[in-house]
Image (tube, rainbow, N blue to C red; front, side):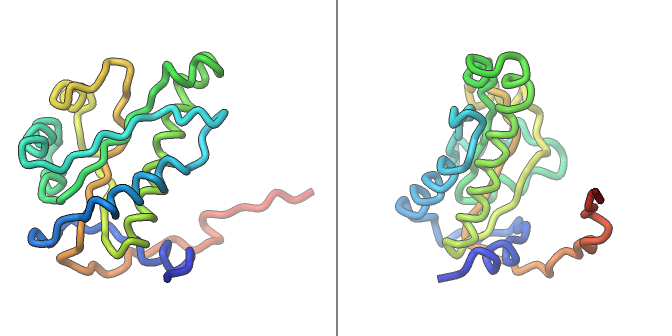
Length: 176
């Protein structure tokens, strides 16, 4: 069993997946369960997750990808995280619709990525898509705003860790 910090350190963007190793239904379910356990504003879970696992759905997904994002259709599974602003607006008004729902979807996507690593697989976050084409291709309801695609499977590559900025460049402390 990996500890949390090791899981975080082993999360890398992987774009090549083993085609002969499908994601087991139980593992997909566990990943989705972890995603919906993520914190959300007012515990509303103002997001939707669309699961792509078939070749026909991957073709639909391809229609919405921008240049450079095509690799996403090679993954055994893709999860589309969409903000549900209407759900959040019921409690938080315009700020909920404009900000909180997107944050909710993003946090759930990040939890899914960590669950994928913990399950022995790899993923990448895809933002190279046209929102309207994605909504149309997948028949997403008009009120859902796609914010991220997480594609994943068993890795067929092990990329070198990306360099990270040192803490002193990223973190600042407010002095009293």
